[in-house]
Image (cartoon, rainbow, N blue to C red; front, side, top):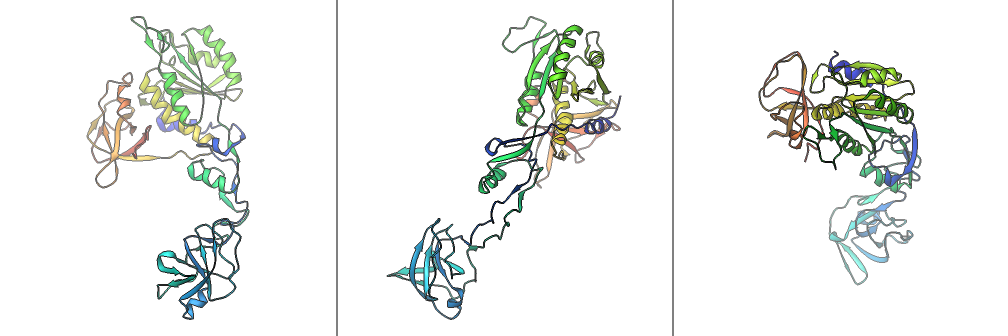
Length: 401
């Protein structure tokens, strides 16, 4: 049985690459850029007015002129007019080009416009005020969003502004999620007295959707032949297989042996943790990566967030983030296992993240997941943990809102 840290290292040493694809920029939310987005022209592309007001030559103001003749009015999108005289001004609207010969914008709030003249009601103004100079942000051809960035609202905005209608992004894996067990029936079926509805595969699929993956779902009974038949097809057609159940020490837990017979190399089986100790991980000859989680709902949920999600992020070029929080109450846990405590994380009075433990009834009790928003990882070499200590957390909900 290996440690959590050893399991993490082994998994991250087996990251995969799924290639690159081009997709419309409006479909790229949450995806990872595989190629830089570059400016197709300077940003801004012209000397841009940033406030409604009048455009003047600062030299005229500096020489004492305060009353200017309104020579023209410009709207956004108009060609830049020529300021022919230092005694003239141009009324300009936000977003329009700076008139040629002008270098400063004085806000309407600071001028009085009457009978064709504009009078500045200030004793001092700053040369170049309210002008966003051409190429002051980026030069043409300069990188505006580097490869490796996760596409979010700001990236979509920038892509639109530079005409990047199609983006090159890292491909996501093709994933099959498989539930195992004779005792499981589907969600729309009525269970017999000693059956339960299967939920793990739907839970895993739901989490994967947050990362842009539309997984296929299958179920297989605890039967070696059925598992072999499924693997014959699955290993040839999917980048990732995620199993739940069938990996413990029971007589009907056929999955580990069947995987190895089908050419999947076991990297490890069993991790020094609770929940999720029977976790199995391996790699197939064709490049398929196999995560086989325990069937208990909390175990599968924990393993998915603690191991699969960081592996996926690393595989598409994203450094898995790390988070920590202050333990909000004393906790005892005697077995020599790394304990993943279900917690509610919120901001304390001083702004730090505080994790309040939730009581539970073991790895089969997933009702707590409705209240919890993270797991707190408590080290295996201790049994007593005190309020105020800081430990790593693995959020599975938004802990900011």
